[in-house]
Length: 148
Image (cartoon, rainbow, N blue to C red):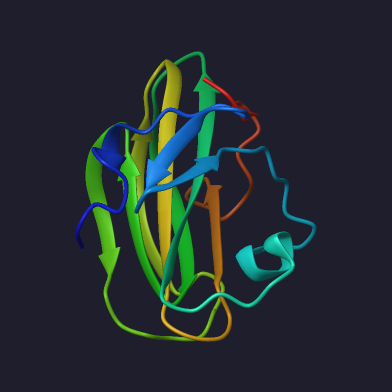
């Protein structure tokens, strides 16, 4: 539950931005998942244990969209900040099970920011998130962006 990056709830990175963690400079980059989940180990082409990774996306809409269902999965631990507010934490080890946890959010007009932190204890390091309407259908009135 502790910040791995200073003030992680307020992260607003774009590709090429730098951050120093544990004395090591890291560079944010755009990545698009090739499946219905994100696999950090596959992206980095290496196995990584006892690490934290972040997925940040920007959701643009023209008006309030209430009762959006957020379905989340993490392998292992997960934490989500929505527009700077801590809204979700799962603090146990577990395998990835799509849609393991669900909750409701309201998208506001303009840019909404989702920061999804995944902590890996050992082996697989994955996360998944999807936003749907109350009927479980994909949102059509939003734009997903990789930079603010």
